[in-house]
Image (cartoon, rainbow, N blue to C red; front, side):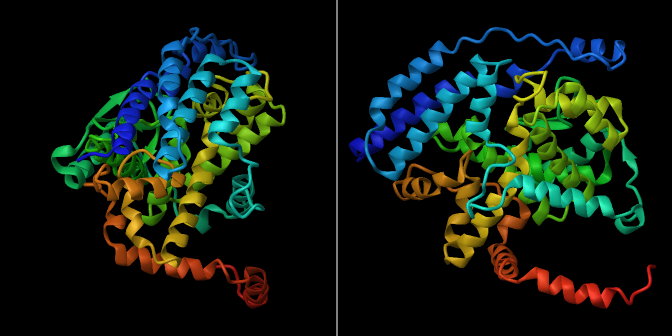
Length: 419
């Protein structure tokens, strides 16, 4: 027999699921093709002019207000739904403030910013981005091997289709080509969309399978089984950092996070910081163009930062900073879980759309029978022995004083001729 608390949690989760389903952040911030066409028609020398349809999320705010009285209490399960309610309300405010400084302030609150401190209170994803940029910029082509051969979007879509059918079976989503997305690919529980005019490599197939299919799609499919807690199905701003971090971590664990991809993620964080420091759209377009040499890709990468924000600089959309930030947080969480002998909690990461701080509540909800275990996990996550071995080793490496080690090998390598 259900308890009053259980009934309250289920009712509130249904309310929040209904509210969050109305938001669709990225879709509402998309720029029409005419913005790109006008930008290049004028020689890529004028700031884009973007207008957004006015957003009215009165209905969302009303649902959140209706949910709040049900969220009184100190239990972790209640606090979890209270965080969801707050994130959903703030996301509605974000979309109501596009094109203003307020949009940037809410973006920082929801997604963080590159200079924001990690849990150690010292490091930031901006520090990591700068380190990646320094290290990889020093390496030549010969250090990284030959350039991967380009692949067409259709051949990449075919490769992804084959992989997801093998990994997800009857739950495999459709893989379709489209021109209507800004990213190279995006995913939902039923579709993986691949941008028809994007450039790809063979390595992109494995990256997209691990990132889009085996995290974003898999967690969406697993969330569909959460009949008692439908809010686990909603990919709202409050869960983005963990979801994208888990997806990039999946690339790392599967061996598909190559230097090119890692540098792109670092560039996103560096570009956001450059815009926060005052860079306008043209400044950041040149920043990306200098790195890629591809005007179309440079426009797309710059658009990602300025969608919803202020084109003249100082107030970008900070969402693209979550990839590195989230990966570090997920990696640290995984290391801590293993070190604290709580590997039993790892499958919870894949039961739906969630934040790392939600794990205590979800563990309690799992005990109550309100959360179902995940059906689909990435291949690397299915073997807990591998995860424990890898994280035990990497946890030890975190304690090694690398400065002294590097000084030792600097002297050794100084005697080695270049090959």
